[in-house]
Amino acid sequence: MGRKKISIIGAGFVGATAAHWAAEKELGDVVLVDILEGIPQGKALDLFEASPVEGFDAKVVGTNGYEETKDSDVVIITSGVPRKPGMSREDLLEVNKKIIESVVAQVVEKSPKAMLILVTNPLDTMTYLAVKKSGFPKQRVIGMAGILDTARFKAFIALELDVSVEDIQTLLLGGHGDEMVPLPRYTTISGIPLSQLLPKERIDRLVDRTRKGGGEIVNLLKTGSAFYAPSAAAVQMTEAILKDKKRILPCCVYLDGEYGLKDICFGVPIKLGAAGVESIIELQLTEEERALVSKSAASVKKSIAELKL
Ligand SMILES: NC(=O)c1ccc[n+]([C@@H]2O[C@H](COP(=O)([O-])OP(=O)(O)OC[C@H]3O[C@@H](n4cnc5c(N)ncnc54)[C@H](O)[C@@H]3O)[C@@H](O)[C@H]2O)c1
Image (tube, rainbow, N blue to C red; front, side, top):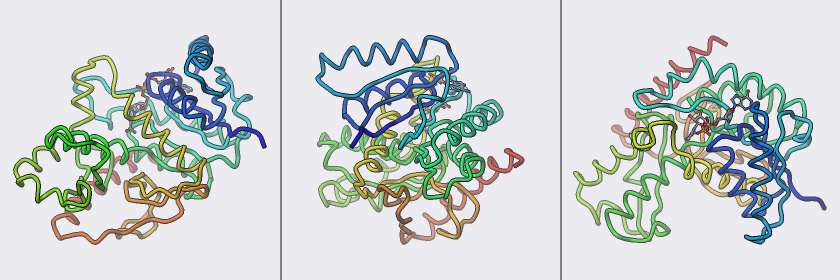
């Protein structure tokens, strides 16, 4: 039985860091692809040379083509332009649309059975584009956003309460934009509802910081966007798939009537395992939560319309 193959398209900050997490966790051999000559080769060789020090067995190769990606089990797509200060994720649509179209066509040709994990922004729209262009069943095309956004919410709660990040459970719905819908009502700390540990004003502040969490990092970095937490999140999805863990995770998936939404890729809790999206979990929502979800869905729909497919 050979090792699994994980291809990562885009060897920039998110892609190369995803390669690092995946190789270190020994999830499989890793192929890094980029259009820049030397960059994927150099980063892959450097990472492989770390393996005797860290003690992991995973081949890591870099390339400018798709031959080495043949028969990948999982393909993480990070190719595309990130935001700069003052930009919204939507500002990336035109340029990243062209990149995703060309990348998906080449990935699909070499790995017709792969699971696709989209990272490129605007995330929900690029996931939708990949669903349409790949021709893959909707269970095999999944966008990464909710794990990152809930990780930020968990991190802020842990800081506020001075407790372990491991003890926090939470959920989030919606598009990967400032209108995402963190769900304090579905948030517990070792089973204790968040509302018993923090007053509403402080929870509201953490929700607001979560919504703007991507922008906070962009404003600090000035030349790019977050990559440690995003790449860790994409690799958590990869692990759930390759180890058939059947994790319940918020991910961006194609909806066909769930949550009253159709023909949209949107963040919802799913069961993620070897078959990809094994089920979509529909939460009971209050009026207020439903209104927030509708608002987020309207802005994702608007962005999808701009693809002019
Ligand atoms: N979904 C999320 O939550 C999330 C989080 C962080 C970043 N992102 C997005 O991920 C993307 C990558 O971010 P980054 O920080 O790694 O950017 P980056 O600029 O560091 O890396 C992007 C890489 O893609 C490569 N690339 C461009 N066109 C390509 C093509 N046609 N084929 C192969 N490679 C190509 C570039 O050469 C570059 O190396 C951005 O769109 C960013 O907005 C999404």
